[in-house]
Length: 433
Image (cartoon, rainbow, N blue to C red; front, side, top):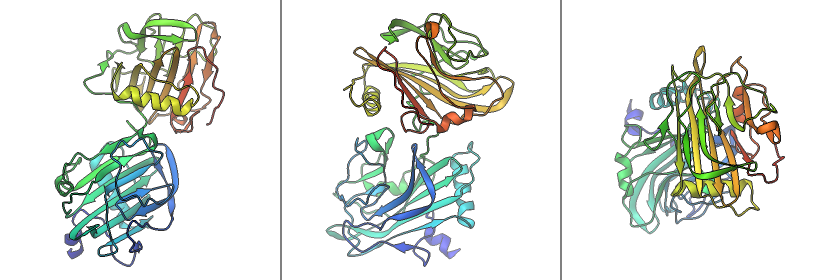
């Protein structure tokens, strides 16, 4: 009971189970081999570094004492409970531990299920890094205590940040997380770092928790808020005709309208109610884009929605993504269309839930299709994922035997994402499953 009172929301630290960092200004832990792999927004890591200046990195130790503000658009994945200029050479302790059995796994499971009640999570690994009473550089009278806890189990990964007493400082600081090219990032919105102790996104003062695998809204583009238009809750239904704010070139044909069909596909000529998929190549008279064409029934659950974007940060994100996967094009996006099937069940299988998304991107004479997959339920129904054209002059079928394998497949080395150039340019032949 005394220990619990001392720790508060903190996980245990500071005893013989912890390994201590060197007392070195701008220093770091040595390379720490992880006892279980940790999935961080689609990338799988087997090592980590606890850096003295208040952050974790996966590739190399980081001595940088002045933080980059997020999004930083850098080449580094980073988790930063409090990235600032810390000097543990004159005081405080920085330590870490890993756990793969015992009561802490139960505690982590309870915490994650409390904060994410729909995931039915069971922790198999916990990593705890703690900065205890550390002073800022040049401010020996200051003392800040904070902690980051990585939790994983199955295909799910979470980051928990716990804050105790945090001193104010005139130094720059950054709290949150960022990824390579800032495809995913979050900056905790506080103006003074001492306010971290009273802030939260889970209604627990001093605690922030984030899901960081490739789950919902991991690799996904934004969806589900007031900017989205929702499809009717109608079995085998569709959106109304959607006029495109910019024309979209699809293998030589130029379209100015589109339909988002409830059964997991997009069509351009008319809405499409067919619930049993044609396997590609189908040699039909229809252009179709099918992230997951199967018999879906959104009448009993889930949401299907869409939006168009012609300005703002999503164009920058789409440009960065496309240039990462097609580095020789110098692409600049001018239009993005996002259609999302969120937690939709299969017909007759109300307990199933699948989340996936298709993103159309165009700029200049170039057009691309991006398919993002979250949690996909298995099904005994026929399904088709990929795209096809009139008379199948161009087509691609994602090579998976079970629909739930889509979440772990890719052709661009980002788990759960497939990207294709579709304006009529060179076919992409690189396929990684």
